Length: 212
Image 1 (cartoon, rainbow, N blue to C red):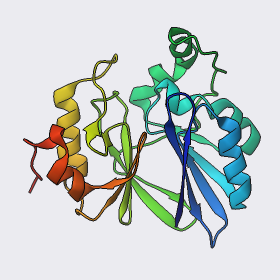
Image 2: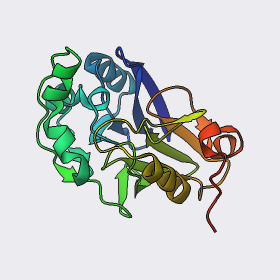
Image 3: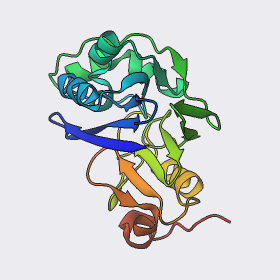
Image 4: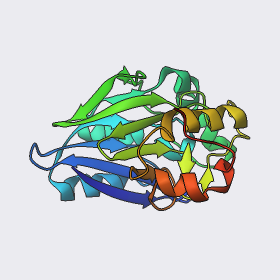
């Protein structure tokens, strides 16, 4: 598996490509504002896009969905609890003075506990609300894509509609701190980190302990 991080747009959101180089297939996570840049990286990878996985439906993570879906044909998957946010992306953009193309309806749901695949690479969907109602984390072998649930040294904001601080902490404890310390964390903003580093040093998690 190869991971390509694509920081982009005025929110410096991290879009990702997950590439199975043997199968020459890729999944696109959270195509943000610079859809053209995401598509450029897809072309450079020489891999066929088989899915667009949305960790959550805030503006900065879905602005590029319409174009990327149109140009690749890759189906879009989203947790249903964020469908209302997704359906109001244009309105989210208006709040920031940003024009946004309305995204197409999702092609499928990211269902907690189920496995999604790109080529032979598998990820388990974990529901982690608190930043948004339908936030998910995608857990693979030695890696996790957390969207805006967990960052290096921080956690997702909870002051937006549908956010809740205690719910977010419980999600992190249940879905992320149960992973091995060596697990690489690919976040929706900022650099990669590890579960162990955040367990030890993240100031928001000082009172949170690993379950079990």
